[in-house]
Image 1 (cartoon, rainbow, N blue to C red):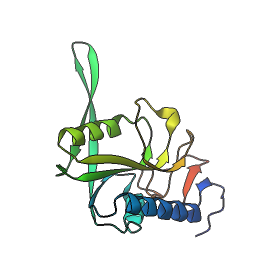
Image 2: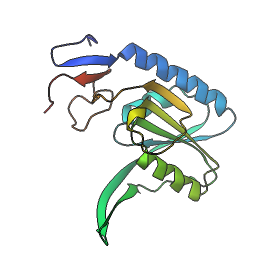
Image 3: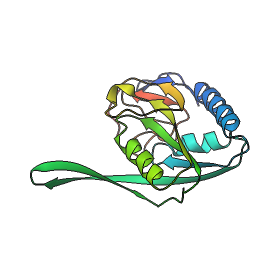
Image 4: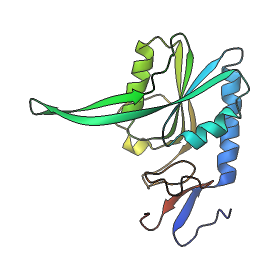
Length: 180
C-alpha cells in the first residue's frame, strides 16, 4: 500500500516507522520482563492492531487479553460525574501487567484502569502506548513504553478511529476531509 499523502489524508507515521518502533518496544519489554510472565492488557478499540504487532515482538512468556472501557455521565445533586466501567474482568492478582493503549490522550480512563488493577493486587503495572498526546492530558500518568509523541490532530489508521472505516490501514494519518 502506498504510504504517500493522497488528496484525502496526510500520513503522520509510516508503516515502516510503526514496524521499527514496535520492534524496539518489543525488545525493551522482553529485556525488562525476562524470566517473568507479562500479562498484556490491551484497551479496545484503538489498541488492537498495536497490541497484535507488539506481542509478536515480545520474547518472554506472555498472556494477552483485551478490555473495553465504558463511560457514562451521571448527575447527582447538581454535580456531574463520569463513571467508568470495563469488561471483561481480568484476573491480574499477583501478575506483572503491561497496560497497552493505542493512543493516550486525557489519561482519565487509563488512570482508572491503573488504580483498579493496583487495588486488585497486580504485582506491577507498566503503561505502554503507541501514541502519546500529552497536550490533552488531564491526569499525571507515568508512561514506561512510548511509541511516538503526537499533536492534537485527529488520527486514523493502524487501528485508530471512531468509525470502523480505515482502521485497517497500515499507517497513521490525519484526514484532510471529514470521514464517513
